[in-house]
Image 1: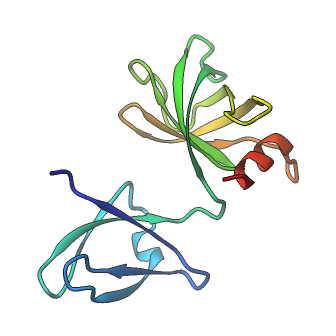
Image 2: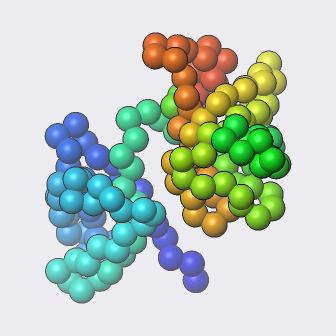
Length: 159
């Protein structure tokens, strides 16, 4: 049986609330304590139960998606490949490479994908690679300050 990973969000005061999956005990902790956590962390309750939690630090809503796309290296133009976009927000996205992942944190890339909206909007962005986990790549869009992508913004607001 696969372990369930609960996602918890940082509140406006900088705290996260953990709820034990066994006894429902609530623990409130400062999120900055876990600021460097990559992926899920394990929380141990006073009842002895150990459970996995992923802390969400993002300021912008991230929508799950599954569409094909392409990535192209800017830092290294020889790098390119097919990808499957897994999530997207106004400031970034996460995708999986179809083959071996040639990217590294700090690489600049261009990504291109078509949304599954009514307009079939094509999104083209330059992004900086921020995190890597096997084939998964987390990126931050490199946009001019105060720029707005209307198609992406509308897509994120629709269910």
